[in-house]
Length: 212
Image 1: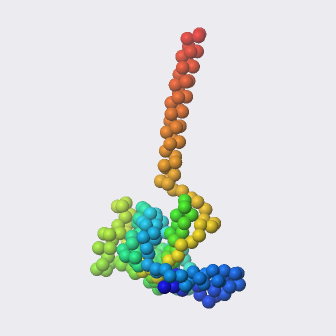
Image 2: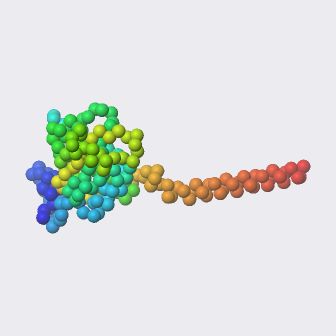
Image 3: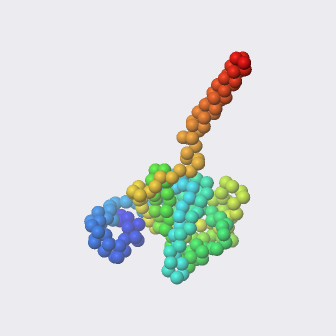
C-alpha cells in the first residue's frame, strides 16, 4: 500500500522540485514501500506522551494559519488507529482556526518531542462537535485534568496520512518536568554543601571566640 501521506503531499510541483534537487528517486522508493496508513503502536504511544501540537488550517482567502494547542501529556486521545481527538479549550476568542475548519476541514498537525529531536506529522480532516448530541460523551472522554480549563468543543481528526521526520535541525528543548530528574540530585547536593558550609562557618566562629 503506497504511503497516503506522500500521495497527498507530493504534488506534481513538489515532485518536480525533488527531481531538480536530486531526491526524487529516494522518495519514489518510499512512496511505493508497503506501509500502513493507520496509526500503529509506535505512533499511538508517541501521541500519548505529547503535551502540545501545532495545527495548520487554511483560511477562506487561501492563507495557511498555524495555532498551538497544549495540555497535560496525553491530552490528544487515539480513539482508533484512524481517529484522534482532543478537547478544544477557550482561548482568545478569535476563532480563526474554527472558522477555517468549518470552511475547509483539512489540517496538518505537527507533534514534537524536542529532547529526542523527533517529529510526527499527521494530515487529516476535522470533525467538530459542539452543542450536538455527541458532544457530552465526547467531552467526558476528552476532558482535561485541570477543571479550570473551559472546554468549548471536541475536535476529532480523521487521519488521512502520517510521516515521521528526521531529527536534523530540530533543536533539543526541555520542559521543567523533563529536567527535574537531572536537577533533583544537583539540588540535593547544593543543600548538603550549604549545610556543610554552615557547619564549617559555625566551627570557625566558635574557634575565633575561644581564641580571644
